[in-house]
Length: 216
Image (cartoon, rainbow, N blue to C red; front, side, top):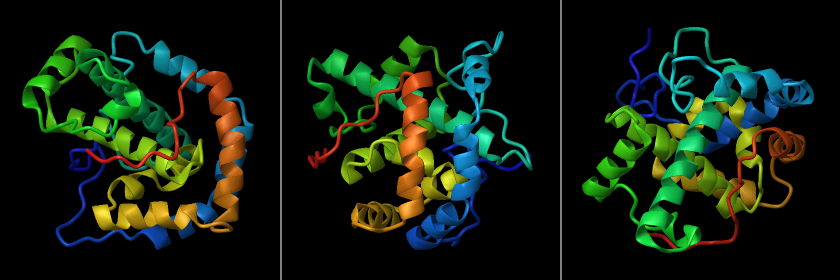
């Protein structure tokens, strides 16, 4: 087993730096295999997430990460799980604070300890830093979609999902800035079209609204 960080991925060694452009280069180079994945029928994967026996379907694919498990299909499962948790939390905030979802997703989510405790209690989630990291990871992916105005782009990034979630704030902003440029990484942007069509038809996940910039 790897030692995991708060996002549920292998912890980086001190001083290890992940940069936006090399990560996007690797995604672009793996776009053919990712495209083949989305052309296939992944209905069984989504069905298995829902029907996973005594395990919590919200966290089943996030708890046990072993060596050799970083395949595209496993990354896809984890992406769906962390986006689901992020959607739950954003919706919960909007409901409990009686404000529109668009406002809630830009407000100060995690600084209110009482709110966070109420959320995990209501959802019967683990009260751990790792669970908090999962929600934050899902919100990172939704932020990429909102700020690039490219719905489905997070699905196209699954070949390098762990590295993307490890980007520091400056590199994360740089990744968004690069993707917003017209003509940048055409294979990635082409892949997201097929990925989005598949996800819309199978998962029911709402993609993030774009063009909003208010920060909490």
